[in-house]
Amino acid sequence: MNKVYLLTGGNVGNRQQYLQESARLIQAACGKIVNRSSIYETAAWGKTDQAAFLNQALELMTLLAPGVLMEQLLEIEQTAGRQRLEKYGPRTIDIDILFFNNDIISTPLLTIPHPQIAARRFVLEPMNELAPAYIHPVLKKSIAQLLLECPDPLPVKKFSLV
Image (cartoon, rainbow, N blue to C red; front, side, top):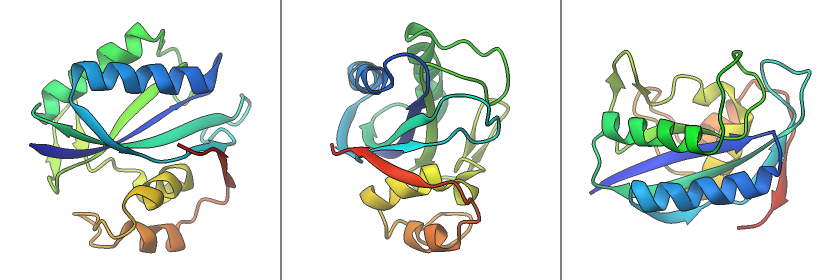
């Protein structure tokens, strides 16, 4: 069984409903969600002239291999109406694999751990709620330490509890 941390997020339509629906689809197609962070709201990162995002971290137990899991997640995004029209653009749902066990993976489809974790407060806040002591397999620092050192100035606030 593989322990995977995912980050879901979106800023189009009923954001909270898209997070809930994507979690339902992930559980149906990929494995068991054993833990969820609160939902957090953050101003858009990267392309700032758009609505604020809601994000939630999920802890997933899955039998799927990383590439197969990524393919399933991309299908779930598509089912939820995700359109990839511009980098960092608005979206109904985005599902990122943050960590897969303690694996380090680099393929054309997949980079694990996600390469931007340490620079994004909207990733670290919900991950810190789920697994503050988890050690990043490349950076060799805990999630809590990465959050303390995070250069991202965007405020991240709790939108709702689990």
